[in-house]
Image 1: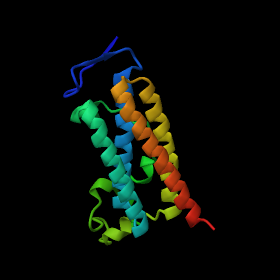
Image 2: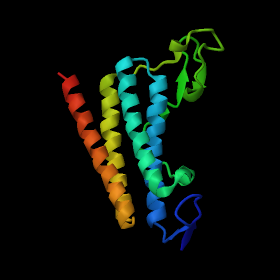
Image 3: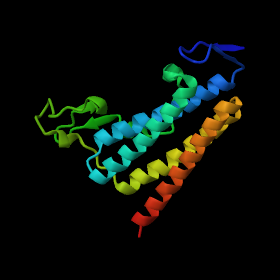
Length: 184
C-alpha cells in the first residue's frame, strides 16, 4: 500500500502502486510538461508563426491543467511525474549566436551579458513544420498516457482523463493537417 499525501486532494489518496494517485501524478505531469515546453518555446523561438502556434498550444495545455486541477487540487503539480514526452532540451537553454554565451530560456537576457548582442541573438530558429511535427508527436504520446491513466482512475476522474485524451488526439490530427498544408 502506498500513501500519497497531496495537499488539497480530496483527502489523502491511498492506493496500490499504479493506482489512481499514480495515474493522476502521471497525467498532471504530462500536461504540466507540455505547458512548460510551449511556454519556453514561445519565448525562445524567433519566427512569429511558430510563436503563435506554440502560444495556442500552450493555452490548450493551460486549459487542460485547470480541468485536471479541478479534480486533483492545485497542489497536484507538486506530485507530478514528468514523463519526458516533450523535447525540453530543445527549448530549455538558449545560446548567443555571436559569442556562445548560454542562458536558461526562462531568464533569457534582453542583451547578451558577455558580448552585448541584442536579445534576438538568443532566439532559436524552429521551422513551422518542425513545430507541428512536435505537436503531433507529443499530443499522440500524451493521449496514450492519459488513456492509460484513465484506466487506473475512478469513474469521475476517468471521464475527465478520457476527455483530455480525446482532445489531444484531436490536436494531433489538427497538427497533421497543418503539416499536410505546409508540405508540397
